[in-house]
Image (cartoon, rainbow, N blue to C red; front, side, top):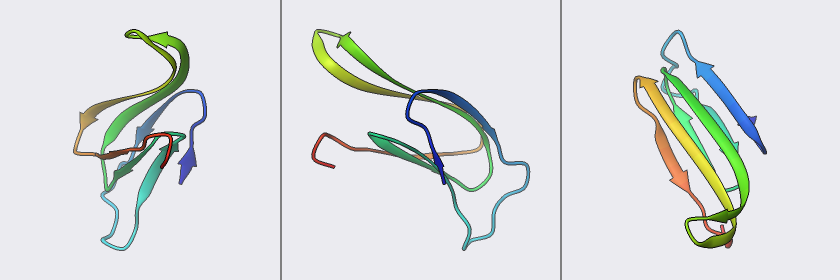
Length: 76
């Protein structure tokens, strides 16, 4: 499990993980789970975003393979 509280991380899982294993990137408002892929996750706080104030943004770019993304609101 990798915790990302600000900035970005590029992940490359070279060999598919076993069924029992997981690789996760957690941000304050999401969890991204993979079994074997190349992906980038970026997280930031924005004072203003699309007309809203105090917004958490998580951007996921999937370059190879698949990812599962779960987003959370302020209540979890």
